[in-house]
Amino acid sequence: MSKPFLTYDDQIKKLTADKQMKIADPAYAKTVLKDIGYFSLIGGYKTPFINPMTRVYQNDTSFEDVLALYQFDLSLRELVFKYLCQIECKIRQLASYAFCSKHGENQSAYLDPNNYNNTKKNAADIARLIQLLDYHANKNKEHKYVLHQRIVYHNVPLWVLVNTLTYGQISKFYALLPFQMQSNISREFPNVNEKSLAQYLKILTLFRNVCAHNERLYSFRIQIDFPDTPLHERLGIPKKGNQYRSGKRDLFGLVIAFRYLLPKQSFLVFKQSLIRILL
View 1 (tube, helix red, strand yellow):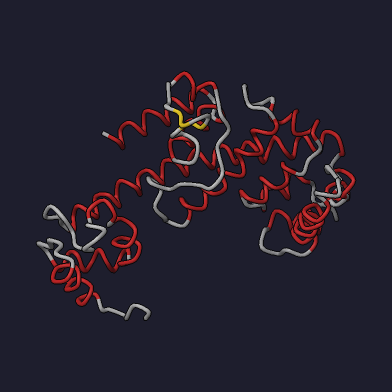
View 2 (tube, rainbow, N blue to C red; view 1 turned 135 degrees about the horizontal axis):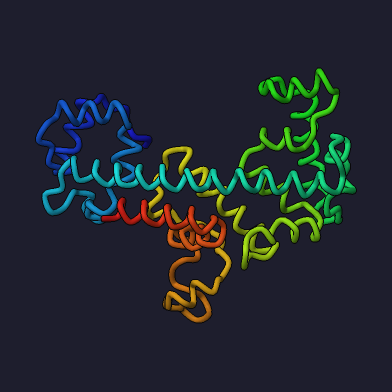
């Protein structure tokens, strides 16, 4: 059976009477539930505090304990999102620059499948990408800067259009570029090759979505691997067989990725901010 709708008062009663959570100030708890939501707060952050067998809170867990974990994760999301956006901005610029330096400013260039890695395997993905780019260049009316280029110049250069694309779409655009163009872009990230950069962008899109949609980040795990790096080895991360036990599908892996994708000074500032959140 589906779970029944509960009023805020019923939610608080369920937490205290059924789940044995300590709530010293029900009025405050009700305000928090209105601001965040039961599912996002309790459903998202109860795991470390609840007995998985009895589904009852342990060790006198208070409402404030769960809220503190939520607030910690919120600070983590805000920090991570800031630097994901910094990488996104750089990739947008590098991708459009690399493409336009070879093919020029005419929008017909990025609407031509022959200017991508146009293999049989990629054909369907390229067709979908071009359909998307064509929509933004010729039909989308949401972005004034695109409309201006369309109306005044009858042409929307890629360096303008690229700003309309999502993280995932930028990732797909890079993945479909010819190898040499990918190589030119990846050179801007020392010790990251073109294949690893494609993998990073695919994974960063997943983390970006978690941050943007206010989902739980601290324990988020992905189903694909971050690339192995020399930093994994230098940190002495334990292995199971040939696979590192951490830093491959978790938030730690994203921190390692930031070390390779962010400028040195930006990474140092990120690390200092991360330490402050963790302490």
